[in-house]
Length: 579
Image 1 (tube, one colour):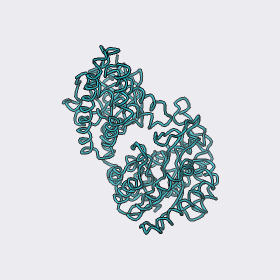
Image 2: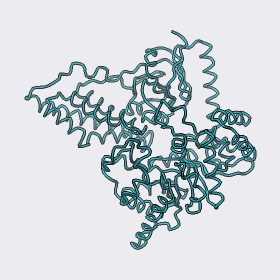
Image 3: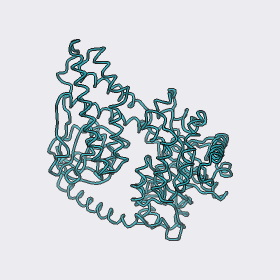
């Protein structure tokens, strides 16, 4: 076998070449486990489970400290969430019930409860939540390993340069990887939003996940090339291929060095068009990372993660502290806080949300907040209190009609009046805008622009709704593309409508972090660009080396095109000419 190319999903960019180390953690854990136990053994099994729980909790505490030290509080939160499962009243106590009532041995009780939880997550429509199944299974494997007294290969002990290959890597495995020796990794399962993928990007370790059955062609000790950008893996490559990829690796290192110079430069085109570059965050700790990558503000603070990491509705005080931390960290730079965008496919157990046939079109985001006003009132109070510590802006998600906007704005005004009467400090001039995610809002942008302070285009949902494509459905995924001419026309319409009324438009969806889209968005006159922190340097480079006048001419031609492929081709040609 030589020179076989396998394709997975690239989740952390970078080219690496090296020998494979095949990692099989907790192999054959459930072998030799009895089906049932005798009544006299129940207390013994409960004791075993309790001891395994205590050891797992302590082990996770040590990993949390390591992660906090190496990667920051936001990444440590991934493992804190795993630790929280061990204290969840529906998790370990349910295992105890199975031991007591069904006479299961501890291993079987753990396995069944873990699979129940994992199946619940795996069946969700939201990709982020679907990937949480791996976190639950990680906790289960840890418990069972302590029950059976097994300790497999310790990843932190690897002392030679390898490319790690595993059916799956749990988040707690990933945080132990030593960049000095683990050049990159590949897995059989996983997706772009898995915690393992997120951690690999934070660690700067190239990774390809989701190889599927092709993974079985990778054996221990074989030479492997991986490309974490394209998702390609070449097993046992020929010498010419090795030489080619070594050259690509060298160019990659040179390009990364060149990008560093753009980190803290203002994003201004060669003919003076200035845009604001901001970052999307989900936790307070990510604000610091955003600043380190050159962000000039926070264009999207996804507050739902604060709610998803709790077992009950976070209080006004808890929310206030989180928002205040972000605002204070940013030191006067703008922070746009989005109100709760949850519901339908993103479940919060304590909200008892109804099951839905079409959750993306259902009871979610502003629809939920307007129906359960107490949630919105509490959140707006917390955000407004935080506004006295910096420059805060508020935006409402999934607005589809002027009626919804006016209802939300009325509640906002009520909350301002309440706080004023109570003598609580807040910034009375906070700007309030809306997410443009629904085609009806984009089409009526000229009407909305008369009333809102700003727009922020959420292209992930706007593309989905405009093209009638479920972005989580792999069967129709090829149709999902933010370069569709219809999407570009809607974006143009929104920007022009805001400018007509002297307002500004931002963008916080995946399109704005795509370097290929940069000339297009310059030409359309997008004012504020908010993206994942890791994309900032490359996008800044393109803006700084572009001329707005040329980008505007590019737009004239693009608006005459009828297909996604033609748009992409025109943009690729433009960028080639730029560099």
